[in-house]
Length: 100
Image (cartoon, rainbow, N blue to C red; front, side, top):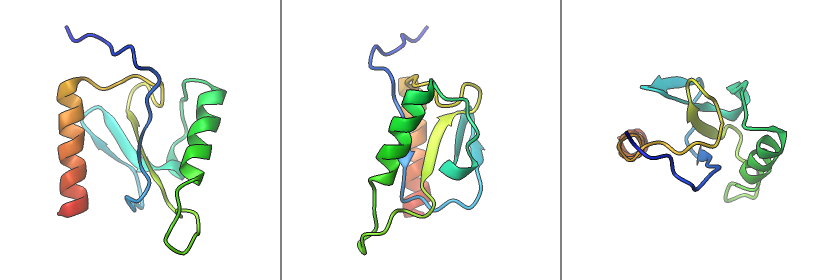
């Protein structure tokens, strides 16, 4: 059994990944922040994540129009870290998406 990381909470962002609609990769939901309906760990966590994403920008200084978020398909943005195997899989999926 994998141990849960004490480094909590975690949010995985892909602000420059221009997805038009969400997709599911195994047990992970990957999609535009605007399409994510929750649940969130709590209201403070949601507010912090939204402010963090708003801090990203384009070279022209505009906000990112369609930032992507990666969360558990079952638990939502609950701050739980993926297992080492899931982290490797998510990284590989993002590498293929961005570079492919």
